[in-house]
Each structure stands twice: as C-alpha cells, then as structure tokens.
Amino acid sequence: MFWDIELNPEDVEAVIQDTAKKIAEYQMETIAILTLESLKPWSFVGGELTRAALAPLMPALGHDLGLTSEKLLQVFEDRKNIEHLIQILESNVKKQEADRKQKQKEAKQKKLEKKQLDETVKKALDEAGKKNRKDESGSIQ
Image (tube, rainbow, N blue to C red):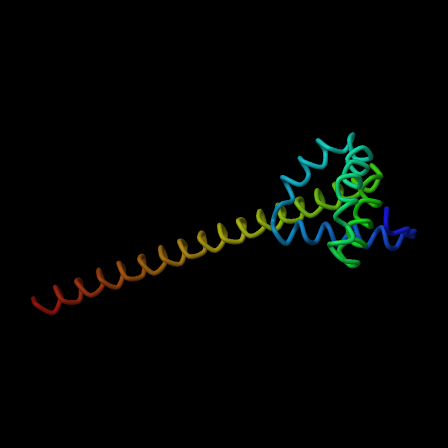
C-alpha cells in the first residue's frame, strides 16, 4: 500500500524462518499449525482485508513497523509460504517429541540402574548382617 517493496526468495525465506523462530520461542507450534491450516484457504483475502483495515493507520505506526507488516503480508498471502511455515513448525515439533522421548528413555534407564544398584547394596548389606550375626553367635558359644 504505502511501501512498494519487492521481496527476493532469500528475503521470503528469512521472514518465514524468523516467524517460525518467534512461534517456537513462545512454544506455540501446535496452535500455530492448527490456525495456519485452518486459515490457509483465506490467506490472500485476509491479506487484502488486513491491508485495507491497516492502510489508514500505517503512516501513524511509523516506517519500520509499516515495512515489517508489508513484508509479512506479502509473504503470507502466498499459500506456498504458509505451507512452508507449517512444514518447518511440524519438523520442529517432531524434533522436540523425539528429544522428549529420548530424555524419558534415559531417565527410565537411570532409574532402572539406580534400582539395580540399590538392590545390590541391599543384598550386600543383608549378607554382611547375616555374616555378622553368625560371627556373633559363634563367638558367644
């Protein structure tokens, strides 16, 4: 509207990656995926309506905010870019899930090792106690 900018593929990718990082920062991947999938068919219409609604406000918001919003609108009006963002978010969720499962597995293994160590110590103490009692009963006679 006010900013006639042309975004090259590197700029588009940077905007998508920055958006994915910000979503991950707030741990909102799942809800973002749900929302993006739901609104993807309306992306172009939503972008145009947003431009129309924000047009009177843009000069008051300042150059930087206006330029940033224009970049976001241009990038996410294209359904391919929304799909790319969804794929990045899904990939992040899968990595987090794999990490969580690995940590659970490691914790379970540690717990099992501790239990085995505790049983070994208990067994050794029981044997030492039996030997002690046997020695005491032998020395009393």
